[in-house]
Each structure stands twice: as structure tokens, then as C-alpha cells.
Image (tube, rainbow, N blue to C red):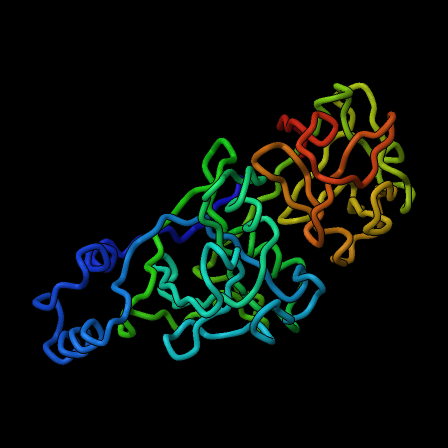
Length: 322
């Protein structure tokens, strides 16, 4: 389950957004500025419920800070320098500024997010259609790749059943809302916002089509061993840890050999590279973070495949081991 250690909402700020920012609740100077803002025909603030996820230097596509619409991702969260977020441009037009009370930061639409596109326009991995989904940039250049990705997972809020948790964002916010100076991730200290952390989960992953479980037949003894399916049992070879974005058996990480459909899935030495980064979706699929491909059962083998949501793509988790 994705969780966050610092979950709080500025109810007063959201209430102001809902009522159009009542002048009597603010200093007279700020009220006058907002009245002028409204008189000029600017959009009034509104509140929307959004699924917020996070991405950074190591799991961007390709790794780095490049974006689809706005050059290099960045920002410190102030109104003048909002943090880049990715979404569907039909959901939030490029350049749209939002305010996220949970982290007290302004964010600006500047990148594309494939899962956000799917959640907005159709039946995506997190829901939809018309599910608001934004992917917030946390940076991470120069930091530890495992810590960066674990921070992203720790900040992403989910329900106990794995469904996304929606939290309020303010659209077209005023410019003087509270801003936290704490970065979402500090590359100098590898510290995550609010001290958020993840805890590894241990257990089996059972394929919905075959009814068999994912395993490392060598139990970490031979890097490069291909992942296999086997009758579900309690052996350590089937007790897989999921830590942030990494599936680990006895210090080896699950890795796709390439990005092409049909690529072998192996257990390799953990180094945090982009082919070892995975995401468990609420529909039971295990998706490669870099591209819309999933781990699937194909004719008895475990390989990379197009994500269809069919039984061959879906994996049921049962806890145990450690």
C-alpha cells in the first residue's frame, strides 16, 4: 500500500477557494488585489479532487529532467517558481497553475503522463474516465536513485485496498497562499518531504491466468536467472519484496532485458537502473515505469507485454515471508 507520513489538509484554504476567497477573511491589501484580479476577467479559484503521484530524475522517460512541453522540469513550489507537474493536457492545459494544500506548494502543468492520459480519457490503470491525475516532479539529480523512487512512493497516497486516494487541489489559485520551504526531495541529504518513508512488503504474486506464482528459481544465487512461474508454495524463491519500485529476491532485482514486447524478465544485480523500476497498479497489473508495458504470462513464460488488463497481465498479491 502506498502511504505518506504527513497527511494534512488546510481546510481554511480550501474553503476560501470554494467561496471565491471572501475579502473579509484576508488583509485589505490582498483583498483589493484579488478584486482587481477578478475585475480583469481572471478565472476564480475552484477546488478539484485529484490523484497525486510523483516522478523524478531516475524514472522520468528518458531519465533526466526533459519534459514534453516546458523544457527542464523544476521549480521550488512558490507562485513565481511552481513545481512542474505532468498530466493530460486536455485535463489541465499546459501552463495551468494549481496549489496543493497537502504539501503547501504551487505546481504548473508542463509535462505529459501516460497513465494520467489513460485515467482521464478512458479506463486507465487507476480508474477513469475523467479521473483527475497529476504526476509531480520531485527532482533527485545527484541523489540516491533508490531513495528518490522510495520518496515518490512514500508521498503517493492510496487507500487500503490499493485504490488511489483523491486529495484537493486549487485551480487558478491566488498568489499569496502559504508555501513550505522544505523540498519534496533533497539530493544533498536524500531526505523525503515530511520524513515520509516506505516499508517493503513481502509476499507472493499469483498470475490470474495461470494460477501460478512468480519466482526466482535460483533464489538469488545466479544473477541473470529468468523469472519463472511455478505452483504457489511457501518457498523463499516465491517470497518477493516490493520496496518502492523494486521487486527483490535475496538481493537481486527484477529487471526487463529490453523495452520490447516479449523481452525476458530476469533477476539481476540491484543497481536502480530504469529497467528495474516497476509500479503496481490498482487493477492488478505490474507496469514498467518507463513505458506502458506490463509483466505478463505468455505461453507459460514470464515476459514484457503490452498492458491490456487481461488475466495474463494481472497479479494477485498475498502477504507473507520477510
